[in-house]
Length: 84
Image 1 (cartoon, one colour):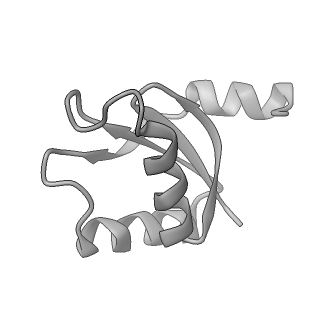
Image 2 (tube, one colour):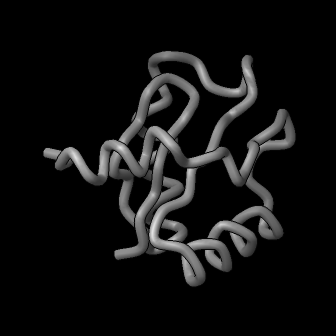
């Protein structure tokens, strides 16, 4: 469960990474890892059409594993990650 303070932080957080139709490339993984090393939370958005509703949760979980982070919130095409 996400506490109230963290929810407020998540709501006010701006999207810092966008995933386009090219998907996840090594350079994008490096960018996410770099951002996680300098920030507590990062917000990632997948552009429309990149993810379908049935694969979103698995996609975000897989991305979290690849970046050694965890998904703290996910709504539609937007997810918030925190360094483990």
